[in-house]
Image (cartoon, rainbow, N blue to C red; front, side, top):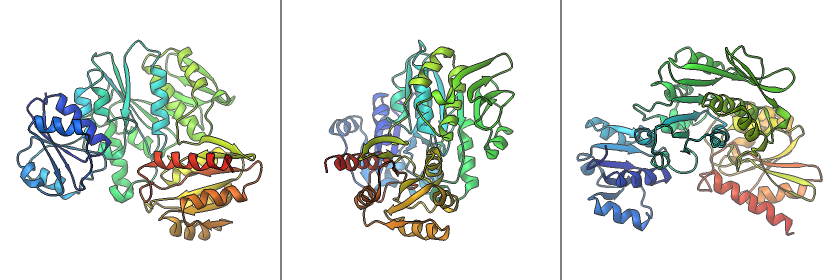
Amino acid sequence: MFKKKRILVYGAGVSGLGVAEVLLEQGASVYIYDAKECILPEKLVLAINEANGKIIWGEGFEHIADNIDVMVLSPGIAQDKPEVLYAKKIGKPVVSEIEIAAILNPGKLIAITGTNGKTTTTTLVGEMLKSLPNKIAVGGNIGQALSKQAQTLTDASDILVAEISSFQLESIDKFKPNICAILNITPDHLDRHKTLECYIKTKARIFENQHDDDFLILNYEDEQLRQLGETADSNIYYFSSERVLEVGAFVNDAGHLIFKDRESTVDFGHKDSLQIFGKHNIENVLAAVIIAYISGVKVEDIKNTLHSFKGVEHRIEFVDSVNGVDYYNDSKATNPESTIKALEAFNQKVILLAGGYDKKTDLGLMMQIAKAKTNHLFLFGNAKERFAENALKYDVQNITIAASFEDAVNFASKIATKGDIVLLSPACSSYDRFKNYEQRGQYFKELVRNLLKK
């Protein structure tokens, strides 16, 4: 399908380099373009040259674009980039990396999106599906490029499970999941999508190509998602952490996780038997249960996975206890809504560490929650001044502006006493200091473990 095609991959990140490797293996001539020069694996450079491709840094784009068949965008590349606009102007197809994955995938596709909870839900679904005889691959906005994962599948019964971001959905064409879920929608990435309305429409693209034999899973407690459900051609299942549903997944009055359709009612056990906690994780579990059940996973296998699943790294992850103080790494909280969910997951007040690269998101609700749920707020990164202004506006007590990430951790450790919780939940992306939220979380864990040595 891609043999002898001239394909320009815009963006030399994980997804870009991943899809470049895949396309080369498919026989395409690959051109990699990025505004900034970076070091590429020697094996990839050799393969590009052997396939008569080219690597372009910053200049010479238009000459190449005139002679390509398709432009493939990495998730970090916005639609309003001059290079993207030029490619569209001269009639070149511009598609997302996940579009390539969907073309290569020989089997079924499960896609999960939402402002928060994507990684946990996708990982949990992948674990549940392992009990099936089918071959399972998990990728997308988590781990490897989705196209690389799709390439590992060979049979129509295989299943590709994908975490999908709004950035990836911007440039889809025929991308069509057999099962998809939107977990929630709250304001995020408005620096890129500009308006909440645009962000919602982009998220909704995940089901725009579905038919009446496909499935769409939505959060009933999100009014925006109920409205989107009315526009879908798919079979819809809702989930709710707050009410009993006639059809769908919910928590009943006794605290049990229930799935109910028109033919049966299944009890997956009490919510307190889970090893992950917080209302948001209950919602993630309910969505995963629906996906696994309609995918054919046996009830007992779903239960076993629920009882053994300990969550994902960097999402309210217990790090260690130092002098009776528990430290939690929630580096994946890159927006205020995610930090709110983390704060609400604890029954006691916490010492909160927040800040990083400021996405200019609204902080009102987060600071209201912080006032009630924090003993002390430590702020760091380029967002710290705006965060401090908003914290003062909502009368948050005990605010410290730290000179660095390290100082925030060290100061928090000095004021914390036995029984306290120190929570890193930044409500910001990491790009002012770190490569990504994973690197930030790993460094936090390293700093905490260094406290043990003191």
